[in-house]
Image (cartoon, rainbow, N blue to C red; front, side):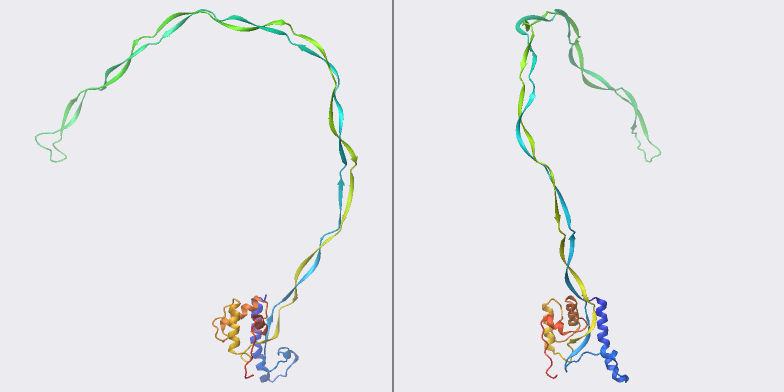
Length: 330
């Protein structure tokens, strides 16, 4: 894509070139080799050329890169075994002493659980609820504001205070009183017995010698079939094909065939404006005039499609599908 600074350089060069060509004959200088490089190539009558900025050209090239070098894989093949059944001695024959337990029989027997005794029982007291008046507030005297035949007429004179008796205040409450006090009585408790079953020996325990035979068990055992071995495998190097984008040529100024007032018509400009609108670039009104909005749309289309910028080139028309039609007076 052409950068903004490159595009401005191309525009400046394309704008300055007609002025240089116009001044060359008037100055009287001979056309030198350097000056000839500023001139467009041989063209037919009615053709217009301008030096435009040709953006950089990139190419995608395939390249083989090493993914990994050749190496050797060492694999240990484990030993192989097979499972077979085999009878093994678990326990040798022995003799053991076996205890023959004693023999018992069950008999019933009365057992004293608790002897006779004297014990003391507490008879709890009995209570009753009675009403009783209690003094809440004692009788007393206090000062009370009084009134006389003449009422006071200001805050400084005429205030009357009387000393009066206030009677005592009582309240009636319920009170619990003891009717019968607590008492202790002596009670005789008889002895307590329980009938239990009791084991008595009929024949005492004894020991006898018993022969214990040997014990065998069939088990599965692993038997070696093939020993372990080492296997070496060579893995060749592997390569990947990757695509790289490389610059083929730098951006530069170059003479290109363009549309100008000499070789275009309003119809071509209208078709250009319509093609730009269809491509999504606002070219302004379709009026056949190459105005500011149309030029701005052309420049945006050229930058987005990596086309030469600076003027309305024939390549731009081709990319938009517009066929130029020269004027009939050329």
